[in-house]
Length: 308
Image 1 (cartoon, rainbow, N blue to C red):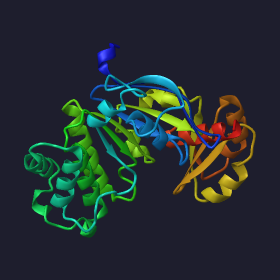
Image 2 (cartoon, one colour):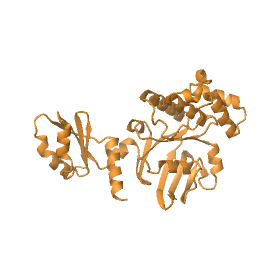
Image 3 (cartoon, one colour):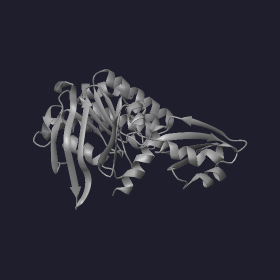
């Protein structure tokens, strides 16, 4: 991969707060025009990493570039070409949509502010609501306004920190349709999320826990390399069956989905021996399946927890 195709290229990135490691020796490469998913539990280091990439935090160690600029020495240049959307709505609720965008454009020191605001309103479908106070908007419209503010200065890279938290499913889908449209225009997107359906819409993804990178690649690659084996069982009383299965040798996860259980482990032979007696029970249907992303990530998180 040519260097000019890498929008983010960092290695050994580390950050500590009061002696606690938030990010540990992180290496990350994100290609131009790619939607890169960033996953991990709360406190895993996702937000800290994003803030180091956009120049808001100085790494304690490591090296690399963002948009071709050094992440330690050239943070001012990075900030000019990055749109950063924080976890929490951070615009002014007592200003209208247009007033919020105009204020943001002033902060950027943009020339032709009116035209830039007009473009952003049209791009995100906000023109008809531009006079509405931000505080009266639903979560989905607030999210769309925040994205419009990020896009005012025509950034080449979007860093989105859990942008759809607390947003209804239709608004989330509309948001992701917009993200894919922007990626189609060559804009690179790094997005953190807790939603597995959103992770599956990314070109590639990384999973971190307790500050360390545990896996990265396409969804298919992450699942294939997980070393997890999963059986699906359908029966009338999944709770009683689950209680019997938990704690048996080779079984690391027993997760109910309605009338279905996912039973997983990392040793295929031991897993099969433990479930063998239960497969003879009447009224139960057992099928070996590919693990889902949620199965993979829960297993990774449990494994990381035991190493802390």
